[in-house]
Image (cartoon, rainbow, N blue to C red; front, side, top):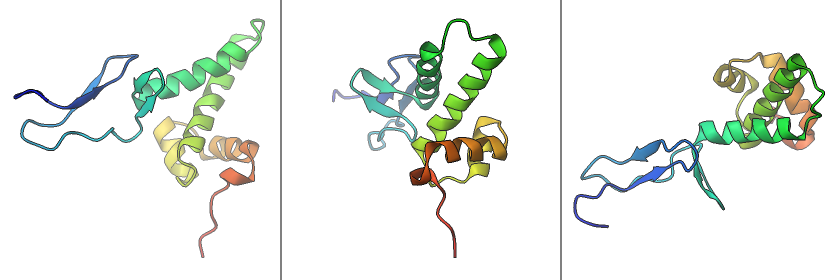
Amino acid sequence: MATGEIAGWTCVRCEVTARSMPGHEPLALPEGWSDESDGVLCLTCRRERAAEISLDAAPESMNVQDRARLRRSALLEFEVTRDPARSDAEIARAMRSSVSSVKKVRESLGPEFALEESD
């Protein structure tokens, strides 16, 4: 690394950059970001990609309301699979959704995404 250069990560999709402050350790990949085969993606772009993949697979004849529901479901599914240990309330809050919607998505994903029972 050249003198004065700041280590950082740039999303290949939206080009947002996360950097460490000068004089600090190089920044690890930020939480929620992913180093994919096609480059680094921020959490926002990872969510958008999940929604787009779901919508691309939907029939073109699907109406606007059903497409919106499908998109919302894909986003919630992404969040549950990204961190299955997070509570339904945490995911709902982060995604501005309802806890019941998160529960439905979690149930549809199967038992491997069920929350651990606390003793």
